[in-house]
Amino acid sequence: MIKSSELILNPDGSVYHLNLKPEHIATDIIFVGDQNRVEKITQFFDSIEFSTQKREFKTQTGIYKGKRITVMSTGIGPDNIDITINELDALVNIDLETRKPKKNLTSLNIVRIGTSGSLQEDIPVDSFVMGEFGLGLDNMLRSYVIDDICETDMEDAFIKHTNWDLRKGKPYIIGCSETLKNKFDSDQIHKGITGTAGGFYGPQGRVLRLAIQDPELNSKMDNFKFGNVRMANLEMETSAIYGLGKLLGHNCLSLNAIIANRANGTFSADPYKAVDELIQYTLGKFTE
Image (tube, rainbow, N blue to C red):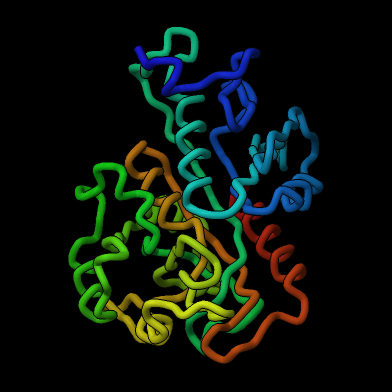
């Protein structure tokens, strides 16, 4: 039995951070970072059956063209993904009354709709990127046993190419769900490695008043390739989603609207439009 200090429930029986019970979520789930983006998606639903919010975690579940979908805000960063995916998994794969894992496990389909900066000049602002792989620069997933799910050859090549300082921890690389990749792919989508940083400023190479450990890291990442796969973009959630999803048996995919191009210093003139178009694209693929 899982102790109450390890799986914390609210007085009403919902999981601690997300404030959800098992009946509140669908098996098809869309992640967004910003809580205000949840309703930008669910406004297109035919109906909404459930809505709740606790802290930055806002959830709505409803029906879109006959399909039951949950939309959830995770907040920013790998640490929030650790909370979100572990608690979602507990909702479907742990009996919350007996506090024991279920014998028959459920796989969730989780698609992240995010915003991101491109690392390549030919991946312009307002385009879409699918992360074929998540590159974790953040260390969060190293708290788990992940060696069996990592792309170790690609990791070693990245460490060598960037002359990575292992005092920052060892980067990890994990692939997306092939099932969701095939379902959501199209000619509209750029593909590659999505880098996940543990912060927005120094960890992504931004300098305000503090010097950073490797000022050349972004340019090194720009030209990293492994076979036919190259770096595409940099954000703060994807590798954590892929890693925890794969460990727990869920299908995960990260789609990002590119609102900045770090290679040429440009920013979208209308980032909201790019996100709206990615929302429509994702909903359309979910119901094909």
